[in-house]
Image (cartoon, rainbow, N blue to C red; front, side, top):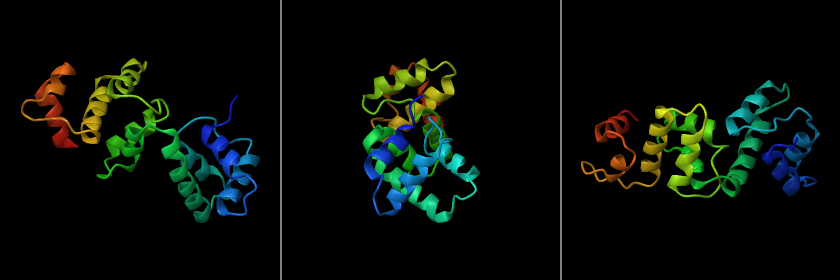
Length: 164
């Protein structure tokens, strides 16, 4: 199996450095149990189970992830994770779909991934659509063209916006 892309990025870019990132790369490189998939939250959950994950270690991971993420994820996913409103719905969506969405692509490409996921449902599509609206605002309420394109009720889209 291929290692987690973050592990590969970290080791390729920072192994052997005399720095906190070099130390993190060495620690992660020696860890045979390091997850092979998952996003930031999954890795943080994994580190929480490792007994020697100090605050400094977790801070270093966060700094490394901040360098890694922009180079490997779509700006929409990065925005979801930063999420200025600290909205847990968007964070949960990013954690669930962030690793599945392509690093490049337009709205239709990204939406197709959510739509084609086996366990995808209308809630996930609605969450994507509302998040994309906030990421790339185009809505001209009350004449919302995107709502018609999504075959959704204009009221449902804007009611959800009010909740978020």
